[in-house]
Image: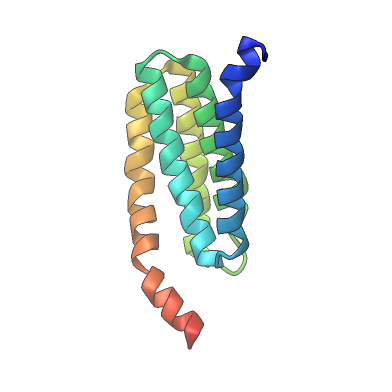
Length: 143
């Protein structure tokens, strides 16, 4: 009835559509703090996916995951920084995000898992600290 290619791609298309709807729903009601948390989560997940693809020698998937991670850094996290109002902290984050982007690109070119690990070691503490203040941010928003 359906071609093999169509039949085998349908579950993936439905899963992708379901995932997209879930993401859009989460984004529509998210606070700015939650949005940054989602970017950190997406960055960490993308690096982990790149590592898995690298280990399995799935170079196309590795490249896609690293491109996604660099996009999150450049367009999401760096793009959201206010370098004028944020002072030295914003400047330091900007430099860190730029460095991690370069290291991710290097990891992609050289299939360097150690570079991916370094990126995670640099980003994970920021993500954890950001998530740890969620209750304070929520309380301040309610007040």
